[in-house]
Length: 294
Image 1 (cartoon, rainbow, N blue to C red):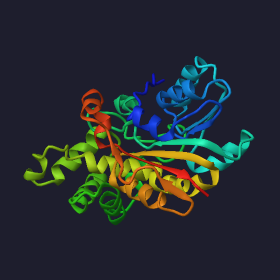
Image 2: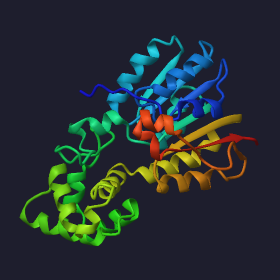
Image 3: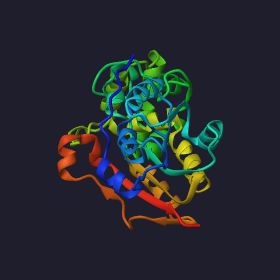
């Protein structure tokens, strides 16, 4: 079992934009280890309420341990945030004052070799946010055609060598199933020209991102959440989203320009250099927030 901790990204900025006050109801749709939630708990107090959602059952356990210490009423759900309205209704809640979505993969998940998210260590090629449900990355690779693999890698990874990588995966698949992160990384690296392998970014980074997005249906999940936000916020309620790549951020930006919402900053906020020095995960974070005005 993973020991899940959570260093909250852009905590000060999140708290400033959400502006939690005593008695408010806060929903954290990616509660992780509870890093943001426990800080919000201090501000909403015992008259407030916290509702947390996460696809990772270990995250739910970790958040429960931390939130128990706050003495703020809370309810946690193992599930998808696209099911937000249904999960709120299960708690007898129709609307909330505050909402946060941190869309990044946590450091604990990346560092846990058994999860298969990282090309930095050899592990089973899994990549599921919820390790109890759905198709693994290895199963996805075994099932898809060369064209489908190329489409995923170019669309979700914005990888210029997607065609070469897809072709090499299919070639390797003829010999045997691709089941580990090391096998996949080796395939990706040998697919690329020498100059591409010498860049500052690891050559497997974009393909691993693409497969993780596909395995977890991350963009469809995000679109489901974004369409729900105006319905679940109270009048004057606020929502904030931390995105970590352009595919997410573009969707958040567009949704937050919708009717009835007021953007709380004209441009996304970025982590300070000081924070990036402490937590490299923050370097690609973009924070956007809105208030429901009617």
